[in-house]
Amino acid sequence: MPAPCLLARPPSGSLNGPMHIRPFRPEDASALAHIFHAAVHRIARLHYSDEQVQAWAPQIPSAEGFRSRRADGRLLLVAADRHDQPLAHGDLEPDGHIDHFYCRPDAAGTGVASALYDALEAEGRGRGLNRLFVEASEPARRFFLRKGFTLLGRRDFDIGGVPIHNFEMEKRL
Figure 1: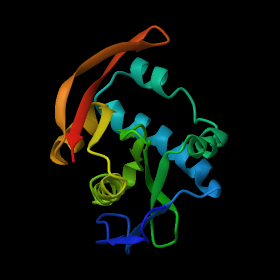
Figure 2: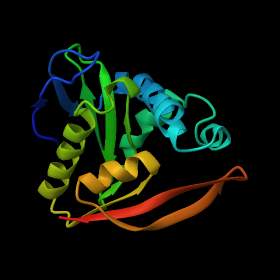
Figure 3: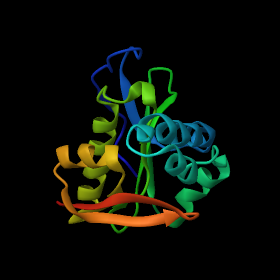
């Protein structure tokens, strides 16, 4: 179980007050589904075509999918605002894989994602992991490079016949 809530500096911009990192709760699921969809459509859209964005996230995913993510042993953390509303979420699978890492567009660049990542890494270290790895999108690639990840290579694939890419990255702990 993660350490108690971690406080971060107040985000800048339209967000006011401290934020905290906490474990996922089932009632967060709908908000996380919306964060995922908004991040793809408003942040990733700056780096991918409309066709790629639509293939990646054609609609807001089911909240149930987020609730079920915890069943496989992964850690799912939420960065929440002073009203305990989710701003970002990230998960850490038992083998060190970060599968989901998404931030609300209005919270991007405020330190929220950085604080969330730091909490995931601390949990990984606490669990004795010696490596974290991720398949990062174009915007996430720059973020993970700043966090000390190494770029292993570009991955080209397609979703429903639409070519898209991401980047295989890792960080040795």
